[in-house]
Length: 616
Image 1 (cartoon, rainbow, N blue to C red):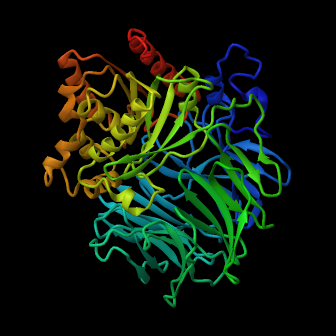
Image 2 (cartoon, helix red, strand yellow):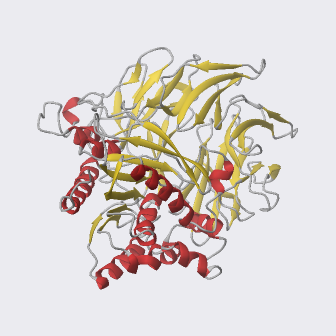
Image 3 (cartoon, rainbow, N blue to C red):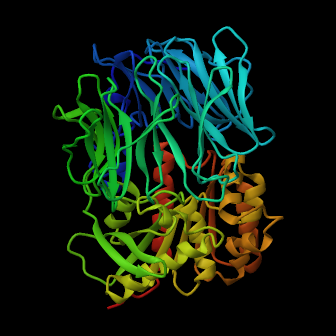
């Protein structure tokens, strides 16, 4: 693996800021960006972050004491999964093949040097969590395979890995306690992949404590591990729960069983992480597509605001000196790593990303309640405009007031962009997220249709020039939408979509099989009518809009065979369509490839909309 020393220099950029002919939309993709730096618990001057500085997203080491930065990984299709060991000595990274997400962990010294197998004796698998011990030799490694389901291993350097947990249903490593004596596991042994239960075990796998809010799968309440207290011998585990209809944190003493409910008076979802001394919690509050930070003092139970600009905090961490570093952006302003100490923490050299237009909030009455939509349109433009409905993936995710280069590119080309937080989205309470079960896809389309109706009747959107698009689950909803609602959409543009639900189920990674069984209530053999009702392939004969599909040939989430099945049906009908296949997995980490895909989508839209007269 190629190593480089020193900081990321401007000459590493594929294109410099002196390229006057480059359009703003392309600059937004090419401009160097960085993730929120992770830092080593016992060596906080050592950090790890992800950047696209060389044109591909890779891992970088950063020694804050000297300012030196070093590129850690260098692979044709990029690398983003990496973990810094608590002592700062090692960087672990996940090595798959061309984005197929099936591989092994490797590690590299922080100062640089050859990579080595991090867990000899463990065969390739899909990852299911990782926790590293402070002793520098212990790791808890989660693995998922189609054959065995989930296995969790205790791996000590120089010894054979030992299985400490195994189950057919999906599970994952939650955390390893500060002194290495306790291991938290998230599991779905009850069969509901959307709502995990928790188990804490000793290093030999014997059970210490159990917490299950699902009551054996009869109640849809989930739990999540947020982290053990950062203090030796402290059995407190910070967890997230849904007992009041939204995500909230509480502190669980796994030895005594005592639970400390924070009962924070904040609307929306709340998450948290420990301050490094264990005295307080850094609270992340998400409400109506925006977020903010607080410090919660565990002794006084007081909540104090941590000042951040209006917009979205997509990651935050409390440093040992009490300052907070956070990754912030808004729809109008590109992301930056900032600190409560003032200023930007990590500012990569090279061209700077142009901004975009602010987002406007719209609330629309829908069949399941009020739907939140985010709207962007060219500055000064008045409708009716050609309009892009850019549908988020997940489905358990949500669009927010955050910077996104894709929607900004459409706006630059004269389109209004509408993003819909349909039922199934997070951030609006548990009932909203869980509402899409069994009528999967169809419920989301009902919400999208309600917002479409508002967009047209309000005069914003031109009904003759409406584009439905999205990636992953958004790509799935795009293909389902152009079949179920053929009169509503002028064009469909789907990236890495589910197209044939039955074949997708049989070919996808095991963890997603479990999710689909939860969403649809069984396998394709057990509930064939539900899979048929929710599959885009069922409605392919009804598709009237030109369809563009892009797909990664190594995608384990939306595999290529089921897309080929859909495309063959389009071909048999002589339907207007184009397909672009690329050598990667569930999306690309290569900037040039991503720009190529956006350019193809923009061109497809232009060619098919130019023949349609604009509404007045």
